[in-house]
Length: 157
Image (cartoon, rainbow, N blue to C red; front, side):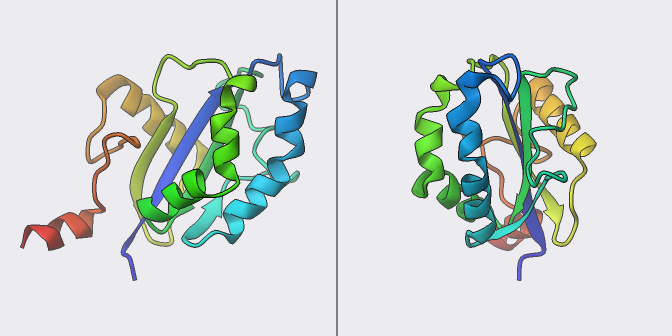
């Protein structure tokens, strides 16, 4: 049993003026399917959602064009499997149809004690920290991954 789980936030700036813009229709029409797939994926622990069962109405950046996703996974491998080896990967490949290029880091990951759920505010702070300071053991991205705290000690012995 892992002592730590992987928390992640990702944000995207939509081409549409907001989530109801017609350009976003196909993306929105598949959100429930993609979210359900995540929830049924091996290693999935939790995801941020509101009464509509997704997080598109949450607006921590006070910008109707930015959508946010926060989730917790057992480890990096299970998150990456979901991202790249399931139907979700089709949406990654097509993201330019719905989203603008984002100049700063748009995905951040960090380790949380198993059973701890990050708040939206904490997730936004982690992404801000990564954007300002780069990847470290505190918060990192998909290109610069850091092992869970207990793993790094185990492997060092």
